[in-house]
Image (cartoon, rainbow, N blue to C red; front, side, top):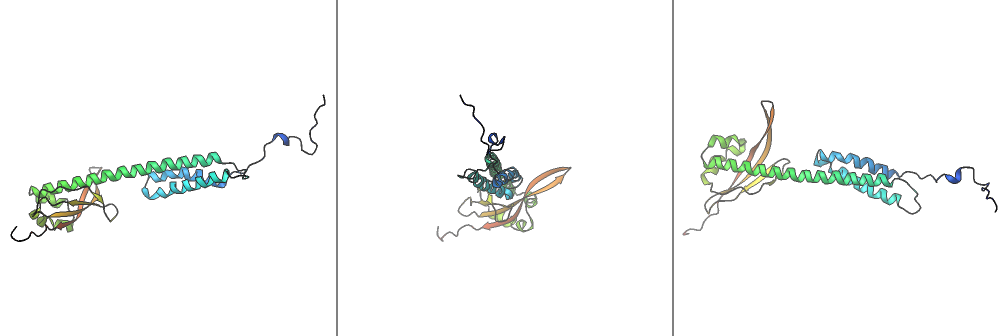
Length: 211
């Protein structure tokens, strides 16, 4: 039995040391962007951060998995992808829920205004309206039927909501309300109320004579 001798061309200890693999810069960037995706929970305006993080993470996985690349960082890329997807999904769900709640509150405020107009509570109706909408209250009450507000939708201006009032009869008028949430402080507490900033009357259709 012959004893094996180490190859003199290999320095002592090098045979046991694994080859050095550089860390992928894309993987590190994906991890940082994935953690930074938490800002999307603050405002939907930051939703672009998790989108960029997902794109960078996918590119990083392709970088470390490329044949002959011999780069480390797969764990960082996967972690960045998971963080970006998690924060992004949570931000999207939060935005959907918030918009649904706001739409329901806008429709409820429109119903309260209509009820005050039907019952002749002029002061209460005017208190819910801005200067421009307040001028339309008297004319709207004269032709208002038993119509009910439809579901609110987002308005053209940021933060505004539009509620359409369907005519409640052949001679009743409809309306288009633009509402904006207004926050005020009373007795140290923040209170949200809805202000009707525009009230557009939709005249009833003209009925043919003799009908």
